[in-house]
Image (cartoon, rainbow, N blue to C red; front, side, top):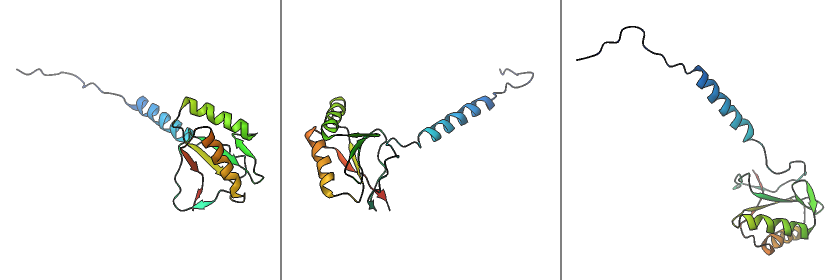
Length: 132
């Protein structure tokens, strides 16, 4: 025995759903393109053929041409950087610390930043480069 349906077939309208999905895709495309480190610090990073994109949630220490260390937009002393790194590592011991150093600075400034991170207990360290 079969039941015969008389009248119009029901229709599922998906126009509103498509609009919502488009809005969500647009939202994620726009907001995932923002950089998390401060681009106002003018650094010329060294170039490397094997560079990879870093995760955006990592802690970034920048060293400018004068050897000043920045965390975000602020110029901090070695002690302040050490305290900030210790605080971050207390929350997440496996945190990756990225060191962005201008290619014109002395190697000693990079070593100093590495020492600060290691003194704070950080051993997941990456050096930032620009991809060739």
